[in-house]
Image 1 (tube, rainbow, N blue to C red):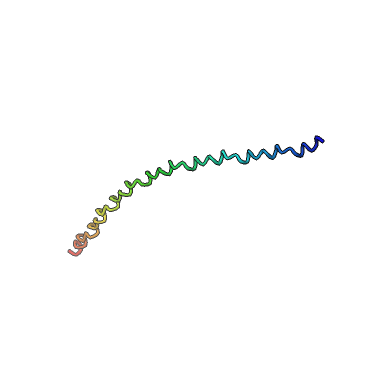
Image 2: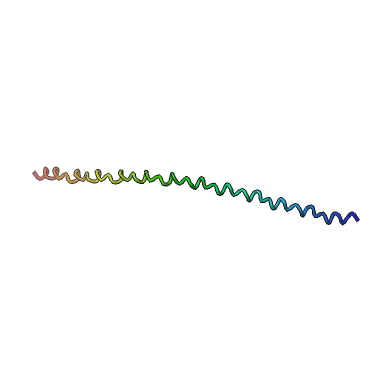
Length: 78
């Protein structure tokens, strides 16, 4: 008669406590860490974008004076 007692063993069924472990689900605190998202300060650094002063340097482009040097060509005529 004590044999059916083993079949009733509902103790193993009550072990769903391990499955419910909602403790791991509550760990979304690491995902919320909006602290890293607030670090867009480095991306905003428009200071580097404002450095187009080097690209504007049209001073080098205005140096076509050397190409125009028709002085050497005129010297060949004389």
